[in-house]
Image (cartoon, rainbow, N blue to C red; front, side):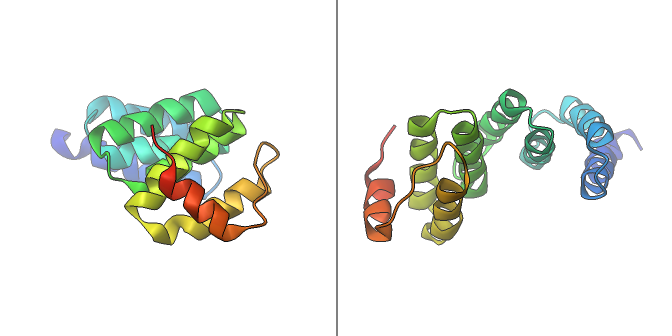
Length: 139
C-alpha cells in the first residue's frame, strides 16, 4: 500500500482545504510533496493552501515547482501572477500573467479580475490594451 500513500495524502489534504482545515491540509500536502516530489498536482494544491494561509513566499515556491515540472500549466502561471502581485511584485506578476495568457487566452477574464481586485493591481480601463500588454510581455 506504500505506493498509494502520496495519493491518499493528496486526497486528504485537498478535502481538508475544502473544509477550511488549512493547517492540517498544509501538513498533509507537505507530506504528499515529500513522498512524490515530481507530482505537479500535489505542489499545486500545496500552493493553493499556502495562498489561503497568506504564506505568499511558500505559495510562490510551490508554484515555481509546479512550473518546473509542467512549464505549460496556465493555471499555475495565473496563480503565480496573483501571488506575486499580492507580494507587491507587479512587474513579475505581469510576466506570469503574460505567460498564462499566451498559453491559453481564455485566462484573460481571470487575469483582468485579479489585476483590478487586488490592492497591488493595475486598473486597466482599456481591456484591448491589457490584451496587447499580456501578449507582448516577455521574460
